[in-house]
Length: 142
Image 1 (cartoon, rainbow, N blue to C red):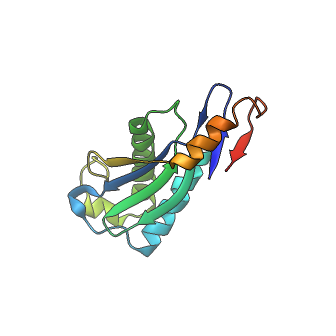
Image 2 (spheres, helix red, strand yellow):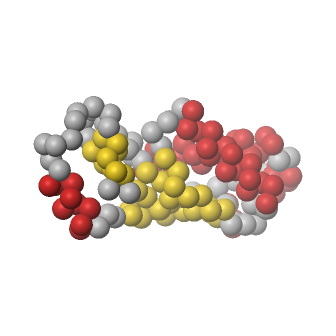
């Protein structure tokens, strides 16, 4: 596991995020799921410091294991991802216009989020290394 060092912080803020389709409709078949993963990864063009550790797509919900820098609110990240993927999926897959006839998007309101912690040994090692690492954009490996 690596710690990420930025100009003013060192972090490893990992989150498990889940959101569901509106009305729990089973619309995320294999083709839609693959396109969904592609669109999620494309957001890194605009937010290169968002890191996807794992992406899991089920028929009616999505799981993300992400590292989000502390400068971003988790709710803003989820809002951005849901908004962009809803728009892109609706444009690419015309059948979604029949499933969701209004303009409310394909995702339900809300989401689940949980933090993913690091262990005591890693924290101890980080504290012991204080003053020995260089400053700047270094990434620490543990």
